[in-house]
Amino acid sequence: MQIFISYSHADSDFAAKLAAALEQMKFDVWLDRTDIQTGARWDDEIVKGLNASEIFLVLLSNKSTASQNVKDEIGYAMDHNKHILPILLETCEVPFRLRRVQYVDFTTMKFEEGLQKVKVILNSFTSNQNPEAKEQKPAPKEKPMDPATLSTTVTTLVAPFLAKLGASMMDDAIEKLPEKISNVWEVISNRFKGNPAASGAANELVKKSDDTDLQEAFALQLKIALKNDAEFASTLQAVLKEAQKEQHISNVGDGVIATNGSIGVGKIEVTGKVGGSIVIGNNNQV
Image (cartoon, rainbow, N blue to C red; front, side, top):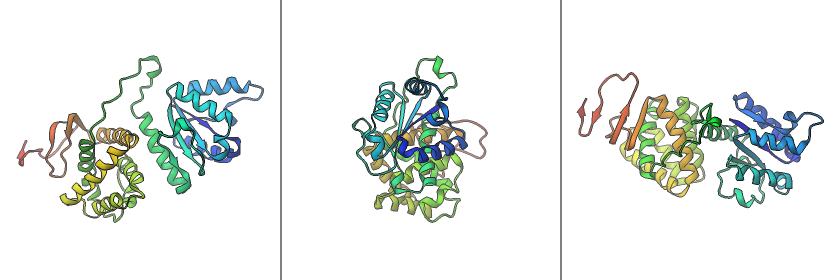
């Protein structure tokens, strides 16, 4: 999926740095300063770039939000149902049409930290993309999991991996977990920052992830966050699905994955090579 970067030329240095970093991560990036040939009609090339891109990434600053060109590009992208990812470069008046869209706040984090959050969101956009999607009808949107089921599923999936780390803080775990599990944990960590109760529950779970009381406390904080933030819920569900694929685990209906001695609720499907036994209900082994 191609990413179109919209920005004010006052922010061109950041735009170029971000584009280069994303390209190193193997993302396909469209940037006017590198993709518009000398002598080409600027407006025509911008429209071509927008039409060829499925993701619209816009850099928000005082200069860009005052730019009519950037406003036009935002309107075009939203009218054509692009995936939208705003990047906040400085405190500014966020355009009205973007105020309900999840953004990455680079004013509160270092470039590399922000870049990793951008990567997680972009991966959630591209995770289900079929290479022939342009020639097919859009797939129906996946039914959202309810917050209680999603929070429990995530907790029972990540807890066994956290138990093996020996980490002491939620941020420490990001670099030590397997990639897909790390993506799930990073989405949660970024959402929990600034919330003492939620980040405290996450830190306690990292320290002693086999404690069922701590698992329940973490799941409760996660459920609260999911109820209050639909965009966060959508992003978390997408990266969870990718993590389940890597672990050869999938939910059927609204069931909850059983791991680390937990009880699975609903229908559960496990594929791939599985060793040992599966515990169902009251320690009934299969």
